[in-house]
Structure formats: C-alpha cells, structure tokens
Amino acid sequence: DSQIQSFTVEIEPTMINVTIDGVESSLSAEDPLTRPSDPTKPGYEFTGWYTDAECTTPYTFTNDPVGLNDVTLYSGWNDVRTTPEFTAVPSAISGLSYTGNDQNLANAGSTDEGTIMYALSQNGPFSTTIPTGNASDEYTVYYYIAGDEYHLDSQIQSFTVEIEPTMINV
Image (cartoon, rainbow, N blue to C red; front, side):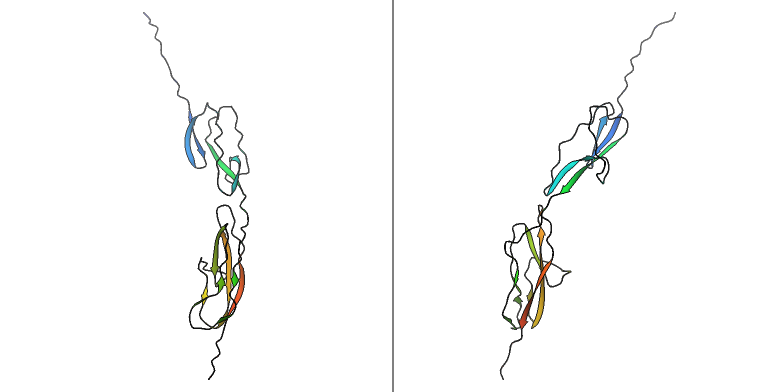
C-alpha cells in the first residue's frame, strides 16, 4: 500500500543589506528600494543619491526588485555657503603711547555671519579677544571671520599698529 503524502514548503525571501548614509537596514531581494526622503544640511544643497563615496555615479530608483546584491548609497552635496561680510571692519587704534600696561591694539569689528577672530601672528593662535601690546613697538594684527554654518571662513586680513615711545623730559 502506498500512501500519498503532502508537504508544504515555505521559501523565505532572501534578505539583503541596505546602507544609506551609514544607516544599515535590510530589505527583501524581491522588493524595490524606495527612495528615502531628501536629507537637509545647513549651508549645503542635496544633489541626490549615489552608489560611490565620491558621488559620481547616481543611483536610479525603479519599481524593480533590488536583487541579490547589497546596496550602499551616499548622499551628494553642493557647498552653497557664502563668504561672510563685516558689518564693521576691525581697525587699528591710533595715537597709542607707551605706558608699560597692556593696551588694546584694535577697534573691534562686527559681523552677523560668524565670529571675528584675532591674532598677532598670521599662523595664530586666533581667538575672539582683541590683541594687546605693552611695549613700544609696531604690531601687526591679523583677523578673519570664522564662518557659521551658512558661511565659509573669510580670508585673513591685517593692519599694523604702533605704540609710540613716551618722551621723558629730564
């Protein structure tokens, strides 16, 4: 006596790894890859999704199954930050004479597009503090705007300031 037996076989879909901007997830190889929402980033314009880190090969989203290969996508960006502008340019304080005490060497500048940085050397260190001098000498004050998230850094500029010697009558 032979008996007929019946079996049910369930095949699980193959899952693939999907990485979008460093975030990993998985997707059935039978499903299409849905275009994610366009990301935003202050000072940058989104240019699309790419299959390479250099963002030279755009990814084309279709309704076709994604297939058996893992997918990694990178977001592309154009830098649209602008050069910042001074609302008041830093300037030399004139008429300084030697006193033996620290004296500010500059009138403060201002901007709404970053932070003004000052230094007594072109290589810094730069800080938000106006440089001072206490010797009879000529000083070069360097300054620039450290741009905010919507602005680039400005070029370093400079001016000279002199603390004149004090004449003593004897």
